[in-house]
Amino acid sequence: MMNRILSTFLLLLWLGCSAPTPEGPAKNLDKNIPQEKKPEALTANPSTPNQPSREIVESSPAASATSSATSANQNPDVAYFQTTQILVSPLPKIANHDSSRGWPSFRGNALANGVATSDLPEPSKLEVLWKHKVPKGEFQSTACLVPLKGRAAAVVGDMDGLILAIDLENGDLLWSFKIKFGYACSIAFFEDHFYVGNIDGKFLCLNSEGKLQWEFSAGSEIDGSATFFEDQVLFTSQDAKLYSLRRSNGELAWAVEAGDQLRCAPVIVDGQVFLAGCDAALRGIQLTDQTTSMEVPIDSPTGCTPAILGDLIYFGTEQAGFKAVDIRKKELAWSFDDQGRSLAFRGNSAAFDNLVIVGDNARNVWALHPETGEVKWNTPLRAIVETSPVIVGDFVYVASGDGRLSALKVQSGEVVWEKEFSGQFKSSPAVGFGRLVIASDEGTIYCLGARD
Image 1: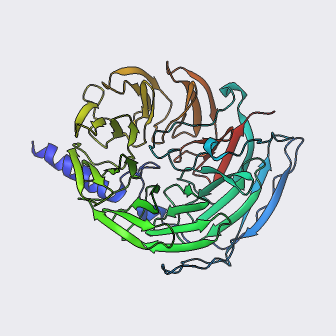
Image 2: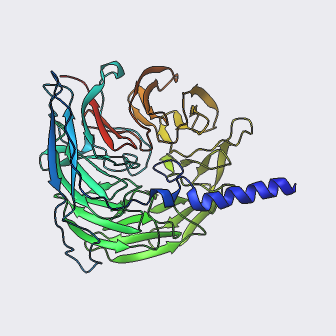
Image 3: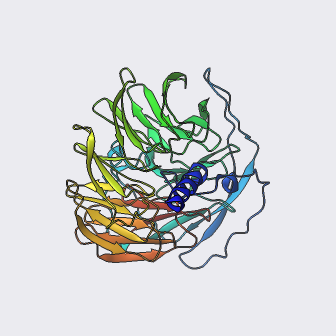
């Protein structure tokens, strides 16, 4: 009995220091605080037929705060180098830049259900169209794919404080923004502005040209992507607070404190915002008066962002399996842990029609019935899955810890395609405008699609 108590205490102590973020696996924060790097030259790879390479040198644009919020901690004079390689020539065109075909936030939409609105070609036709390398860079966040001044763009931040906006069609750099500390969470896009928090607890708003509009200081690291309600932007922090800021100027509208660290992205439905936290509870908070509308025990800490499908909300935990909570009845609907194995679910789920799909740290991808938690299929992969799957039509795309991207049939779990990349994936796929974008922990952004 004493051994069990001691084991539980040690696990909870570990969670407080290195629990998984909602957008990447567990990490030692001390090891991942980036240091500002001096510029260094990068030699472009020799060109080969159909694989021309080029060296692009850009310095982060100067930007000044334009509101009453805190001025930016930025260094506009820092320069960096990167190589963009075009792997397919000629590159296929993106004809439709409608925002409904994009991927504007971490899980693609306000319900965080990981379902793409854009289609992709058959998995067998996917190939790398371009890749963008940040030397000594590391990506843990997922790209957002959005329309930007008549183009489709991929916008993503790295762990060294760099945000890149890249033309989705050809891999050209559109703009960059640089501050000292990096981004574990994904950028969210709303009404021509980008919103993101960093590991130093700063929450930033940039306009469509990458210019800083305002900055707000939270009490601790920000790991979850932002969401939006009326004229406000909401996000969580490891200081155990949910913040709501005025989008126009970054001023605090209100804040609510939970019992422990919050690492998820907030999700909103029917005038309530839902949070799953390290205090082993799922909370619902009324947006009108910030009162608690529900609090359901979930038996374990979690950093996962909940996904909503109908009246049920889905999320994984660190040591109590995968959960579904009925937000109408305000109670646990079901719990799945694979015959008591207490699997750790550190990625977020994709919820679609008759299935909820999620990966675990034991190398499995599970498809569960959304109403009962019954296992519909289980597919083992070659490495742990701590990223979040994306459903695109009849297929679900999963990135695993060995640098593989796999396509599985949604209804059967059969692996029909996979491709191995250099490094590991701590970020998840983003799908929009007929492209799939994913970034590695070795500082490379990949764009996949098909030839015209």
